[in-house]
Amino acid sequence: MTKGTCKNSAKEHRDTLQHMDGYAISKKQRAVYQDSMEIQLTSKEFEVLNYFVENKNNLLSRKQILNRVWGKDYFGSDRVVDDTIRRLRRKVSKLNIETIYGYGYKLVQNNENH
Image (cartoon, rainbow, N blue to C red; front, side, top):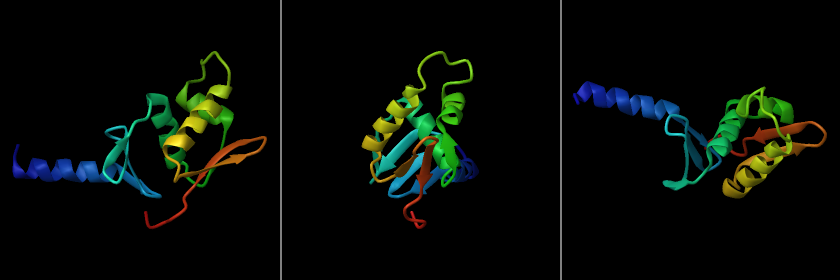
């Protein structure tokens, strides 16, 4: 690998990292880190988290999350969204995922510097 390729790879990696409330979220690696330690998330947990990060501070309905992560053809209970968010809250407890009663959820960034 040439020196230029390494620089480009490092830049691509850096561009995919999102820092939020003490976590580093890598879209490219589909991974979440806290203090350089990877937090184990299922594929759906990561997809829900990524959707929240892409829409931080925006209200997302359960249906929007369900359609985006599970697809419009998903056949099953919409409670799968609630269960996945409950597990996410346990695994990434520093993130502020608010429940908006009767509507859905919102990821509120606690600290703009992280």
